[in-house]
Image 1 (tube, rainbow, N blue to C red):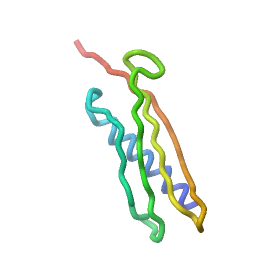
Image 2 (cartoon, helix red, strand yellow):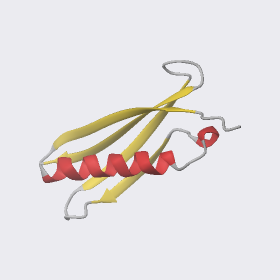
Image 3 (cartoon, rainbow, N blue to C red):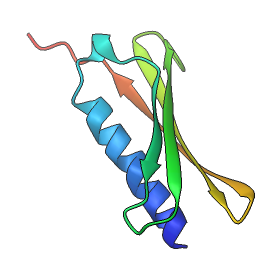
Image 4 (cartoon, rainbow, N blue to C red):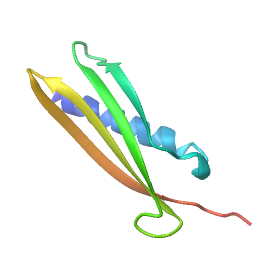
Length: 88
């Protein structure tokens, strides 16, 4: 449960970081080999940006965190949708 909680936290941090980027700059990316704050586990965080999905003017972002637990691959995934807000 501790590793899953950490994976959720890393995914949320990635989403918060992406939220602060200008809409036009949102792009697919990754961070590899993030050490666990509790020690022993290494996490990989990647995100995929889908443009005009599910509709025009919208970007769907899927964040995936992966790690190994006792030889078994584990994964946590979350997604969100961003729209471009035009201010007048």
